[in-house]
Length: 152
Image (cartoon, rainbow, N blue to C red):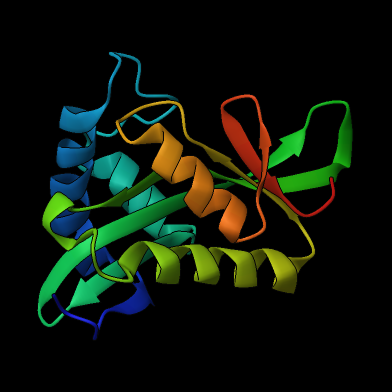
């Protein structure tokens, strides 16, 4: 398995790769609801890329994972800003690599650099116990079906 996985911000040239990974993520979801993601449109993907909060995991010339993030504000306190994931996904055949770890570490760096809290929602898919151990190992605290990092 490859160990030379790199993490980089997405560009508009990556829209096709993003949509391909989103389609794979939807296939694996254990429920029909796919969150706030209007994932089937290129417009949504382009909007995410322009926000500068889409990270891609790449091995050689292949994009193998993504983390789509979105900045949110608590409606009752606009000072309470946080960054939540829309999609956190690594292709099944690359899950034995360090791609997920590198994506998560980059997410934590964004949170540390901005001073914002992070929320990852892990309410679909399989291997939930393994995902739980993974999230806790990197300092995320479980809150229901979500994981938080930092203080709100």
